Image (cartoon, rainbow, N blue to C red; front, side):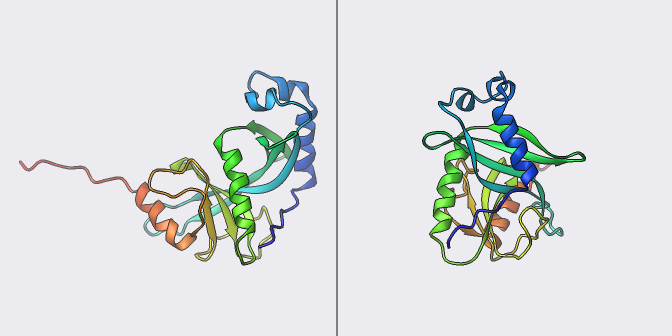
Length: 196
């Protein structure tokens, strides 16, 4: 599929650009080292709306997603070195934080893989906090990026590396096949009791 990277809200993009222009934000002690030591100017690219998946473990509950913000890959002269997140507050879009780590390269890899697939999908990031898991969500619905959306069984999920044990990273899974696996991983194992 030709990847149509969505346009982030203009105010979200401006908040990230302002953070990148601020020496306090980019050189602060809480700034990830990959961003603090990056050579040259960093530019935000490939904005993706971030959604959180909840209700995975509930037997009678349909999993829900809710938008939480936008994530931009930060690129210098070569590969992406980090991320910048913007979130919606009562006062509008604001810069949230910089990030780094294995999800940066894995996001780029998943986007390349998604661009080779057939079909029309909207790329998003889907976080499953209970499993410390992040996936590239290829949504087949018609909602606008950044709006609340239902996870459709035909949607594709590409778990980013590192994925939880037993879940294949960097490869597309249909949502209706992956969700039951996630649900089973979240159900606590029964306690073993010894007979009296």
